[in-house]
Length: 234
Image 1 (cartoon, rainbow, N blue to C red):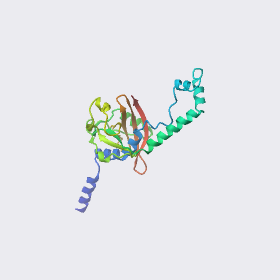
Image 2 (spheres, one colour):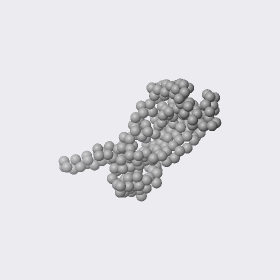
Image 3 (cartoon, rainbow, N blue to C red):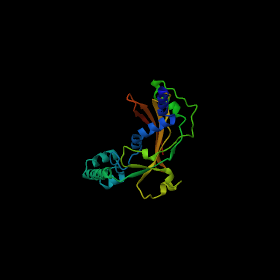
Image 4 (cartoon, rainbow, N blue to C red):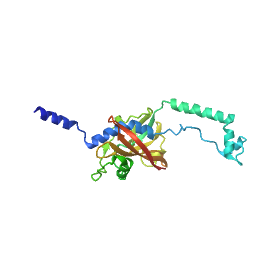
């Protein structure tokens, strides 16, 4: 009787496939969301000025733009611009204003080609992926209380709370809107030690990018990002 009871307890604690997927997703989300979101105001260095600007500052761009740019980078004007940019950058970094990201209410779909991509990426592991029983329209409703990010400024709001269609990007929101983030479901190999998912981030109707993310379980049983590959840009 005792053995039977213990057996039942063990059975109840075993995660279903979907529960396992959700746990991995929420465990990785802090790092994934931080990597997907990039504040375009924090470029590594200020962009070079236009030839017109350099000409107005007295540099000869007609004969050799690159030489003119090098000369300008030795000038006081460059140093002043760089100092101004560094001050703006530091102000942005220290700004504690929250950034709100639209996120789907549910995650429902796999990407069919990920079966091949997963096997090919971890080729030395000789993975087996059983995709014949894909439930392409079955997924899970997102628990927004579990969406935490390594970027402490990020907050996530359900896409259902935003306007539809073109108004999604045209609306002037009462909060600091940072863009739209989405993920596919995670495809695992049969051992549930390797996986792949897709992600996309958009800042406007024609301003976004997507990637394929390969993940694996380390020797301590923790899931880690193995590689991120770009898949599209708009």
